[in-house]
Length: 139
Image (tube, rainbow, N blue to C red):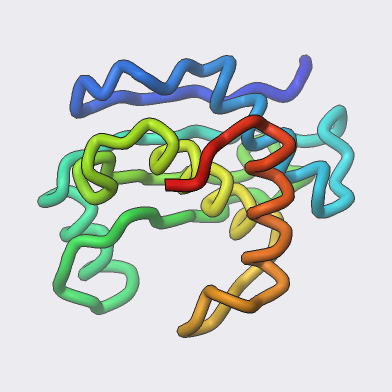
């Protein structure tokens, strides 16, 4: 079965298709040297601010909304790689912003991290390269 990404749109964002999410995640995973043909599934959930706030509190002990969270499940070669949770409201309803966050979340699932500061990290450089290659204007 070819690599694919399911999109669960709980907020009627209606701008991120499963095909586009698959393209973005595949580009991010490939940029990390992972073989897309051997990867499990990824899901992207588009949620409201209260939902992502609850998740951020539960899993990171931070009582505020955030833009994106990634949850690894089985790892890159498992049946279910993981889930990327995005709050479109957090990025001012900007489609490019949501696409950036999908790439960001996928890079986390691929094993990248940036610590407290994102700018100037290897992850920031890889993300910029992936976004440029996917035709995304950074928002």
